[in-house]
Length: 149
Image 1 (cartoon, one colour):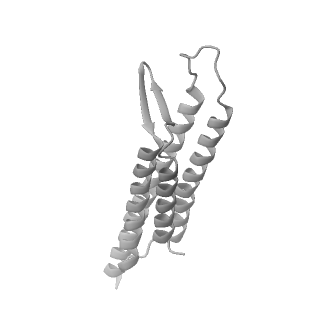
Image 2: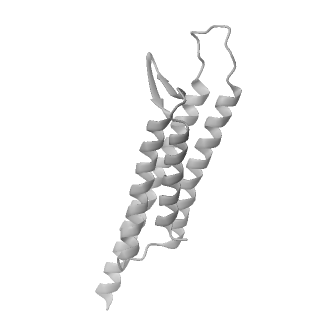
């Protein structure tokens, strides 16, 4: 299966999951100092569906050109990107399972959940550097190959 097809398939799955949970008032609450950021599940799924679609589009464009990417870097990028999606889904499910009613209704200790979300997002966005590096290295390889002919 081509990389772009996989990214587009996952984007579709993310969007369908978001539509499924759109009626739920649940979302992700990120607490940074005294500020709470509440993002609904639908908005998160739309953002990630767009991001995965853009990555798939980039791989589709590269598939249509003569530029051949390094297979190992493409595989590593693919595994990390898809792994972040799976880890995020499993992690959010886990944190929703362990939530209990607090004795203090205004106190919500979300430090572990916030750390998890930030860590997964950071790994995902840093892994996108692999696509850029792969593109640069493959372009340089092709330029040097043409120069040596």
